[in-house]
Length: 398
Ligand SMILES: Cc1ncc(COP(=O)(O)O)c(C=O)c1O
Image (tube, rainbow, N blue to C red; front, side, top):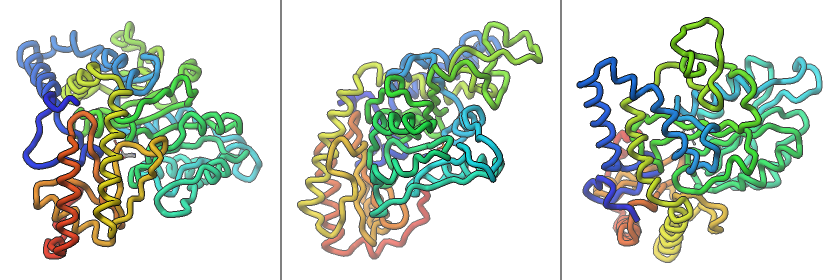
């Protein structure tokens, strides 16, 4: 739907859920900021000083927030630590009853679990991982059971990184609050693909990256949402870039937090990387998230239907209900890794996730039905001939 706004490499790209393709506007914005640096040197800071804050209105649209509730900074992992440092307030010593434990899921991306484990270790608390009944998805009853009366904070994925299951953010946020549990969301696999209403849902916090569906480039600064009801307190982790902007350069040793989520910045922002985000957001300024979602569902529905019709050897593990799936489709097969390598050798870029998942992301902004059809056709051919078994599992890391 916006294919002409992107640099499209040769072949078929189905890996926008790992690293989104480059919007022309992102390249132009980075070059513009390089020109600033070349021309203005340190004087460039006049324009760069508020760059992160200037991106908040566009980011807020993506996540359904108020602009002062979001900021571009850090990474998912760093932002999760920063938010836990503020919001995780375990009650009482570990021997006593009180809200002190943390909840995540057995299907989480590992970095989130590592972050929670570091806080649990400091506090003598547990990280409880919600089990999966089928190894791919989570059942709402198991999530609700985990939101127990000794849990302080739950961090859940909006979309599961392997199966692509989309959780009910609004319903689970409500359920967590009814049970007295603070709830944060890892929205890495939904921002830029699925509309959000984080403010209205009342989510306490959320973290996400911009290098997947937002197309801001490798290692682009992440995103952080903190509901305005938590804005009164000083961040648990502080740095000079989170200081109120008007007096930041007074260099006082008394920290006066910036109003809103901006207070969660720590050090000097990476201006060249932020420029990639600046350009990428211009693409989203030209569409609504409802349009993006409708197109994404069209493409994933087509892909799932074709996979079921033509690839009976592969199991579609992504939920069929559109209300329960994000922007990618996961196909399970014991030879998924070899299939991924063989597809790449043929110019089609999927990715593989342990132990047996081939992920395909037909991205609303730039993929086409013809690409979906060709990808399924190539898989059909590989499974028929067994040619993928001849390709060594090259040391791919993505
Ligand atoms: C769901 C999810 N959470 C967390 C991360 C880690 O993100 P970061 O490296 O930005 O901290 C990733 C990275 O891909 C992810 O997919």
